[in-house]
Image 1 (cartoon, rainbow, N blue to C red):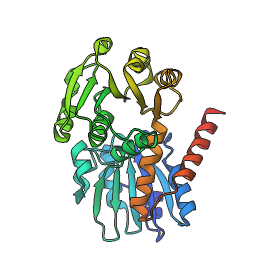
Image 2 (image 1 turned 180 degrees about the vertical axis):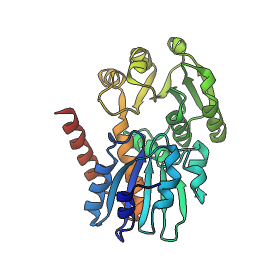
Image 3 (image 1 turned 120 degrees about the horizontal axis):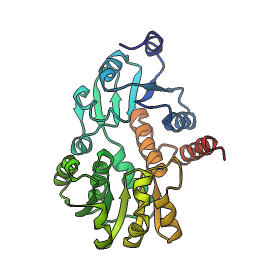
Image 4 (image 1 turned 30 degrees about the horizontal axis):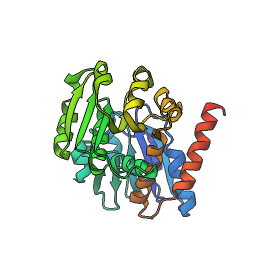
Length: 287
């Protein structure tokens, strides 16, 4: 059940949005969305709620007609799918809903802004087309990366897995996207052919041990982490003169898309959102 103080908030006539997940205290989404509302002249609220898979249905059922959207992070992106009246093609392809759109009639539409957010982040750095890619990791974020790379033209992805047995969902997503995936181990990296882009979806410690090998084989590094920054891989890419795209770029672009979908105002104030996010990160790091 939704706690009493949350129920009181839900009954307000003001438009509301929120980010849900567990853990959630670290999220920069409130900073980004609230900045957008201020820039757009909207008197909307954007709150933060720690919600796990077991509590998601109760939370969604507890909101009223004043709510317009929920940003969903782990572990809720798949749990949200059965709660939707409609799920768009991108979300169905990667089996992940990171944005739940709500209307005044109570209808729920699930979508995914991670995939187009990745595409936008790459294009912002001049990467408009990809033929081949190297992917570190085979989890949920890697699935979104495959879909993003496919939309940029990639048809071959070398996926580096610590445990190939966990790559079933990645294979399924790749098949739906028309992408051929070759699974390799971290020990195989030194023998791989060059690729246009490397996308790392693994922890910093995991990519650090292969950073030099990866950098030698690609022209662009997409590091999905952003806190702390730079990671060892990102720093190696920058030192080698590679194009480096960071997780913060992804975060801002996917949030801007969420703002546009939830508020029906375009374009979202991307520059202001980026500036406020950078300031929040610097404050977090004590810089």
